[in-house]
Length: 271
Ligand SMILES: Nc1ncnc2c1ncn2[C@@H]1O[C@H](COP(=O)(O)OP(=O)(O)OP(=O)(O)O)[C@@H](O)[C@H]1O
Image (cartoon, rainbow, N blue to C red; front, side):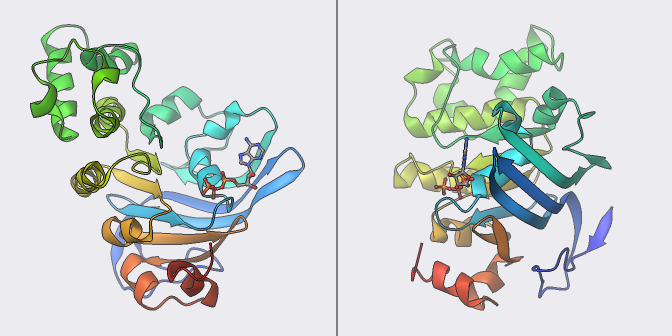
């Protein structure tokens, strides 16, 4: 589906006359933790093979929003969500959507690298085997190599595939987690502050990797780091108090933000 880039909801305007394919359309998304409302009617379009950054002050709902996209919030008993997150013609929020299948399509990389307590090889091979994507043997070996190569880790680990994933450095562990996510062949990769626990060199490596990965995947990333959003993201959404205040292509957002609140945040005047 090719869609002209256009304003997908009331608070959202675009300045570019670009065309992109839509991966996800979010409409009037509301979420409550018990009685407390955390998301207040989010409208957002996520474009295929682009990186969309979610920025905003602490507690504004970025992670909550990200976790809606693959229903990770369902793991919290008090959560209730309303609205639409359309992907491939289905509302992700519908109770008829199989969460396991959804999380295979919409993978997630967390702030703190969290390899399984298994070998580097098994960290990659386990889920694809469970999902019947590969059988044991050469097919599985190839998938492990392909995933590790795609995550830029193969050359560093190819001679130690039987070592524990946890024996790697923090940056390598995060690339292992990215390789693990890629291995089940998702369409979308969600990243929740994927570099905040890493040193600057590992951060730069992951950012370069994100540029490569967007050729094949759609990425949505939460970041507190304005420079990172400016460096890696094609689109940026500024969240505040559970709402999207502004959403635009990143260059416009950072050079000529439309809203004063956005300008104040990206110039460090608050948040
Ligand atoms: N498990 C939870 N139970 C209850 N309230 C929660 C839970 N998780 C988040 N919240 C609340 O929802 C609101 C949004 O939180 P969220 O973590 O999504 O914000 P954020 O923008 O990602 O923040 P940060 O940048 O600090 O990670 C906050 O008021 C937070 O306290």
